[in-house]
Image (cartoon, rainbow, N blue to C red; front, side, top):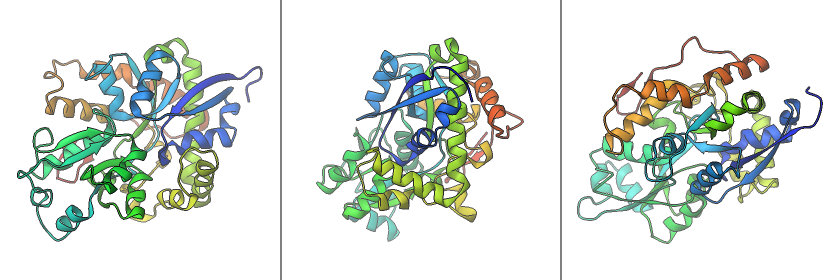
Length: 356
C-alpha cells in the first residue's frame, strides 16, 4: 500500500445501480490501497456530469459510453478531448413502454402498430442525446421500421424522473438504466419490453471517463484510479453476497433513493447463459477492457443519424487517443486481471447485425 498523503479525486456519478463499482471501491478501501481518496458526488443529470467534468469540478466520472464520444466530437454541445479509462459494466439497461403499448407489442403487434405510428408521434425519453440509452432506443426502433428521428418525439429526462413521467402519461416509454425500469413496473406505470443485453449481448454501458488532459498529465493517478475501480468490479462479480452488500451500500449512502430490496433485485448475480444479457461488472476483465471496436460502433451510429460526416479514415487514430489502453493494461497487471490479445472484439446484435 502506498505511503504518504492520499490524493483526493472528485468522482461524479448518477443514481443508477451500475455506479456500484465506485461505491464498492470506497467502502472496501480499495482507493486507499492505491494511494487515493475518492470523493463521490451524486449528480442530477448527465448534462451536469458533462459540464462539471469539462469545468474541472469533477476529476473523473461514471459516464455513458456514448456521451464520451459525443463530447469528443462536439455533437450538440461543448467539445472537449476526452478519455475512457475502463468500462464499468455491460448490459443492465432496459426499454420500457406504457402498459397499453407493451401489451399490444407482446400480443404480436408490430412495433409501429403498438405505438400507433404514423397516426401520431409518440413521446419517448432517453437520458442524453448521444448517450447509450439514446443509441439503444434508436437502434431498437429503426430495426423494427420506426424512424427514430421523424416518427417519434425523443426527449431527454434524468433517469429518476422517468417512471413518474410515464405514470402521468407525459411519455409513452423510455430507455434507462436500472433501477428505473424496475421502478416503472413497481409503480404499474410501464413494462420492460426488452433488456439492453438482449439487444446487444455484452454491450458497453458506463465507463470511467475523464478529460484527456487529466489522463495525460497525471498518468500515475489515472492508472491508480483504474486499478482501484477494476478491483471493485472484480469483487462485485465474485460472489452473490457481494452484490447484496453493494445494494445495501447504495441505499445507505443515499446514492439511489429507492428501497434496498429493489436495488438487490437489479443487482442479482446472473447465472449460466444469463451472463450474456444481464448486468456484468468484470467477467475476468472482458467487461472492463476499453475495446476499440465498441468505440467504432458509436461513431458509426452517429454517422448513421447524420450527426457526423463520413469517416475520412481518422476514427482509429481518434479512438486510440480516447481509449487509454496503456493505462488500463498497466492497472490490470498491477491487480492481476487477465488481458486480451487484441484491442477489438466481435459482437452480434439482436437483429443479426455482426459488428467487428
